[in-house]
Length: 245
Image (tube, rainbow, N blue to C red; front, side, top):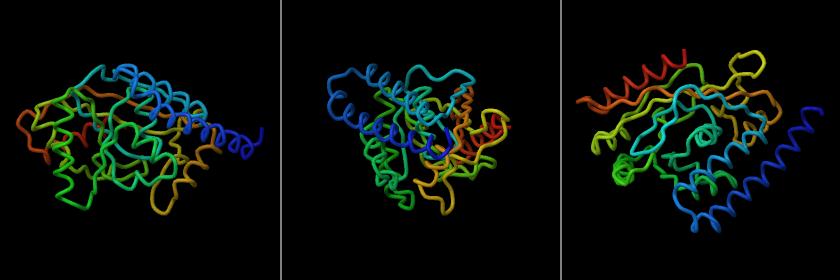
């Protein structure tokens, strides 16, 4: 099948899958236990990756339970989907994700915490929300770069949100994510979402590629051990960089 026709077919099926996910969140989730919700999210995410023809290769051990803060580099709108396919968590995301067409409603319904990155006051609000969630035993995921990169070089890590893990004294799990071409193993730019690229353009490019593999590598959990948030952010950036290389 030509790439364009394959992409159109996948887009239609993917849209149906997203709408089905919204129905599940609003109609089914209230009746499920937390464990059953987690399993539904994992299954839904894996099914969506299959529709997008994105393979998933996991190295290391995904976390089994919280409280835990997952820290990952950020490349694409696909990142949340990939992480949830391996081990669902609640995410902390920049506020404009809430306005994404259709996907924004789905991400919001999954319990995402939103932050206005430019507002120091809002960052403190989210840190308090994160600390409460961690105390309750949740697993949270953050992207400390604050925005998407090209997947080849890490942007500076911001340490503000690490304060929640320090305050509650819970471990942080570094995770390295990259996208490669399935056949060659070379880096794939198809899912990247940077610069002037629109969300729709990035989705369409991924659908047309049809040969993307997401590689997710889990490192060992670590605690602050007396480090402040800025020092810890630098350590995590170094460790994730080493896993990517």
